Image 1 (cartoon, helix red, strand yellow):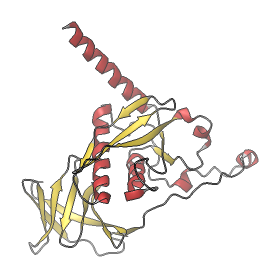
Image 2 (cartoon, rainbow, N blue to C red):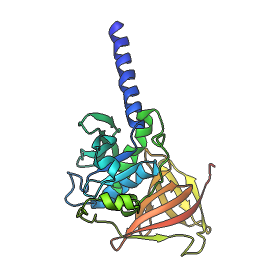
Image 3 (cartoon, rainbow, N blue to C red):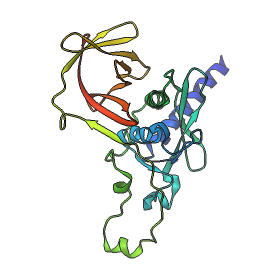
Image 4 (tube, one colour):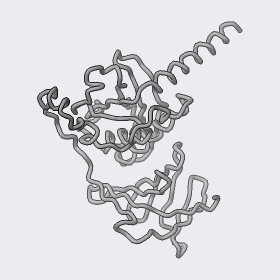
Length: 269
């Protein structure tokens, strides 16, 4: 009985430490290329990972870019973000790992899994599922850090303020390598008529999406991440997920990532 109580106390202490440590950081540094991939931003994985944490309120920088003065002089003010991959013949499996400047583990996500055969879809689904588990593990919202503008680009976020003092003490420019970025074709209300409403009817594995003429347009398969579905259409397979209160459909066409906004009414809402 005493041993059981001791284990519970140790577990609570470790979890409390993870909460405190995570909440005290607002900067993250991720590698330009994850070790298990062959090239930078392969399958759009680096961009997706960076975007997820920026949306949660963090400032995220690639390790091959010039860092802002606050963390360039003290890397211990930032956490190092990396991914662990343990793929099998039938699934893609990803964990998110956060460590401090001394290599100590601060937090590790649950394993995000996907059985999709197409790697770009599989990695995207797996990383989002792993990210969704971080809130559960930390027991406190990830965005409970200082308010920070999200979606800042590398160039804008790292640009020093144009003051005379900054210019006088500014070191010689550091030559950095440009990160490979995916070409994204955005299709929204600005360049397309207001999307027609679709009706989502529940099935055992997810939903069937029909258009106003009751013709089946998509089959949605559930994932462990809320508001995130694998979409199988007549011509393209992709992902349908909710972001910023809007439903988005993303898929690849001729090697270009296309993102469309959809208007979906779920039958059980």
